[in-house]
Length: 197
Image 1: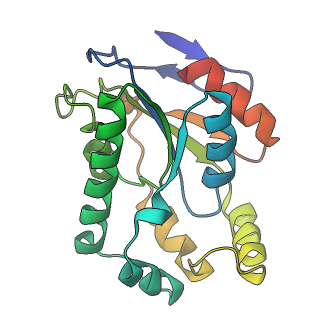
Image 2: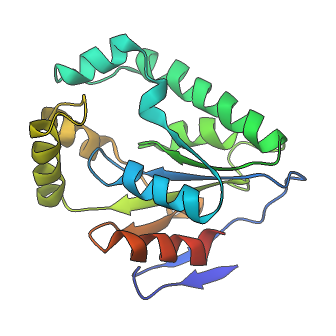
């Protein structure tokens, strides 16, 4: 299926879905400050689905590291991603519609989440778990993180922004929808609904 958008300047070619499950999962991905939680809550309501915030699944040790500006290691990330995968799988098996806000910055992390689909074949990208990148420039992200920290709304230090930007890895073959996250939140949700649901 080939899709284009006026609010997105690219073409999306979603891999054919091979799962027998009626549940679906949409992962809103991107660096901290991209708007994943805000858009995720709105999208969850719009699809009458369950919203999950990956931050709620971090261990206290992970949160403390990020609060102190220490990047997470693979040993920190993998158990967190596996817990998210297991939560998604339970929802998919129960035919739920799930919206997950998760950084999912690297392809190998997304592969863990895609495997929530019990029928997923690694590397095929044909999964009922779909990804949407909320794309925002570094200056806007930095301003958002400073504001959020001043309001005491998040544990992650703004010092980690560049680390996250450096980790962000997108492969066009994955069919990830990229949306300009500086748009009005309602317009972002409408775009996602048009292309992913």
